[in-house]
Length: 275
Image (cartoon, rainbow, N blue to C red; front, top):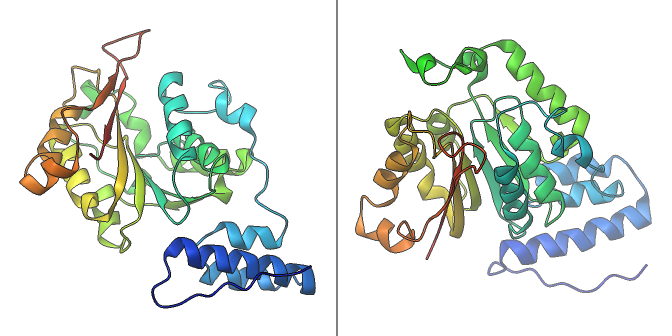
């Protein structure tokens, strides 16, 4: 096996570094066939694909289970599912995907499936699960809120990640979106899916916390925008249009609203892109 000479300097981009390390990893795997290489590459690589290439690639995801609502626990409608998969498949190498509000993992697996069909980028899933708080009166709008804070819900998430293989792509963080953003240092989030608490102030605060980490070509997807009991879009508008810089970056006026044809006042999603 030959290996190209790839020069990496202080000015090299993340993509160039990832490509160089990929070649190095493949060459090392060919020469050494040593499984002990994998943990080191996993810990040090900026691109999670490299570690798995040492072992022959990511495990195959169970797409049938991920796409089947009866086998995939959660509350995401098929049109939103399809959009998440497509958007995740287009995320560039060296970028990441962030999900706020993972519940039992249905949409998390959709994002992982899309990633597997594209550049195999990492998916970070944030949900407080049984560490979360239930806002007073929220259950009158969202009866399923009682499940959010049960330990069984996190167990269902973990089980779905394992059964489908999505866990190979997903790092789960038991945290709210706001708290999770405090520990996230990179500016590489290319796709953010918001399906956490839907009150206006919740959406606003989650997005405000993550906007500094968003890539220049990032996309935001908001869930449950058609439900009149919530103010998801209003919360997003407050976060994305509050300054001139943000108004110039985010194309709020050109957002794409996709109401659920089956029930237009339930579910639905909005896609907001940069200009």
